[in-house]
Length: 477
Image (tube, rainbow, N blue to C red; front, side, top):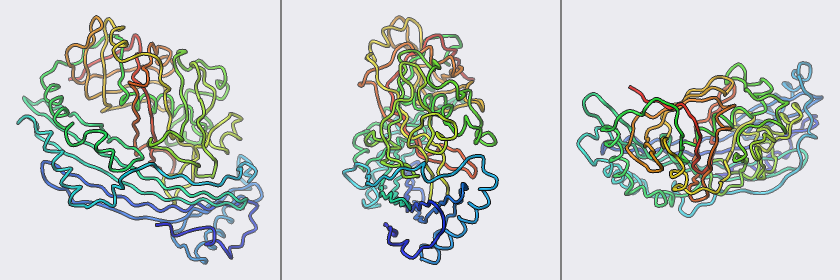
């Protein structure tokens, strides 16, 4: 699918002190079978380039899908004009010296390429998987879906950087809706799907063909269960809910462009300030959080960010202390805080901005059994279904699909509509136990939105299960 390489730029002329070109081609396929009926398959292909130039301290960019020499030259010329304008009004100095020279390749690990598989066979597999959800007449809606994406990107710069990256994402999901006596409950494999960089072998790994019966049974179980109680309890969050907790109350607050105020108009600011880095006790000593795009197969793994910077695993929070922020070369330079290779764009027609990638909570020492046994009165919650957080990413309220009470160290009755609330600045300091590697799993979402114009992008979060003490939980009506 690659339609571009460095030779495509032969003949381009520009007086810019520094430039880079990012080519991206993407192919998507979305399949769903709902109530035994195949929904119309959808697919798309898209490609183009983003040209960025630095000139006399200003920055300009221009995107185009015209890959001819004249089309590329026109993009360079327009980007230069914008750089001239911004040089007179910029709050920072744009310099090519910010960007080191990196060359290399990256490709997602996979065994079976989902997109090349027979369409009829893929739909039949989804149909069969969806039927396993129908464990009871009270299941009134059921579906199986899978979204596959292939993305190829090439980055070249005037200083000699050159890298080629190929990623394959797969996002399967199952969902069952139960209804009786005006009550409705939904149970899913994962509310936004299990998104990973992998091939069709993922469907076997998650037991897509058989796990539907468990999902359907849990939907019925929820329908017959009492509401979650309202009181302060110990809270055990499974890995699939830790996804959202990490994302909203660690990931977004430590984005450097948000702290700088760049996102104030649209996505908000942060309770974190520049002077907190290096000293702020973000959580208990059990809290260790890494930025790790090198984590194999996770949703947002890559070798180089969209400004050509090479990735490496970097600790952002160690023993509860905030060390680094989520910001690329430019934001790090502006704020004077160490960042990481996280300048990313959702497509060829968007400029890269500071984004989460794989933001992971490192495993601890406790087994799931030990965590449950340590709780006198608490609740286990799984699978996010609702979220709300203020525009400084501090006060939050999250709801889950599935809950189970824990009494005297044992799992007890199922409860429905389990919710909890807290304040980021306090919540992580009440981290009481961190699960070991056996409780860890990697999840992600393709829908993290940020930036003007909006960019929805893949982010990943690997985490063990965790216990938090003295959390306000409550049910729903």
